[in-house]
Amino acid sequence: MAAGTGIFADTGIGKHIIRLHHTGIVLPNEEKARHFMGLFGLQEDYEGHVNAYDSNLIFTKHDATVGAYEFILPLSGVLTEYNKGKGGIAHVAFEVDDIEACSEELKAMGMEMLEAKAVEGTEEIIVNFIRPKYTDGILVELIQTIGPINYDYKF
Image 1 (tube, rainbow, N blue to C red):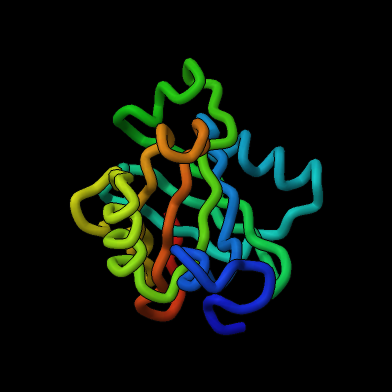
Image 2: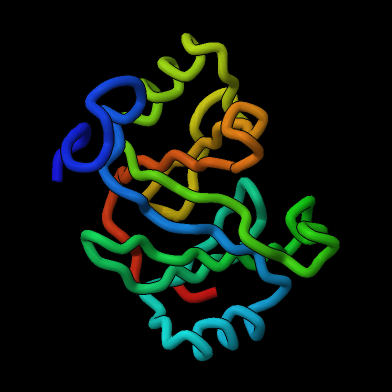
């Protein structure tokens, strides 16, 4: 599905949204993530690491209509203290066709991004976040795919 078609408006940043990419959940360790996955029958798609936030990631399988879950396993930094170290739902992420165009449109609307420029996520994506003060307290991640998924990566 092309950006700006389907359920998203053809105006504002809606015209750039391709799909809901994932829901990010911070958990204190891999054991907790694997337990959650087992409880709900979620299957792993691939693993990754985000240097900018020093976190290992586990993405679950998804399809064109259902986004993945991203389990964020922080190794250091502020995410280790998320919800007093217990973790929780961290963000929703939308895949967009052009992250910098979205960022510029959001800035023109008076909003700020978390990062000055998009940063590398896992190997295949770049990311930036809309500050939650502009989205009623919900952290929204914007993702642009820049390459193929590395299914061989293991942390």
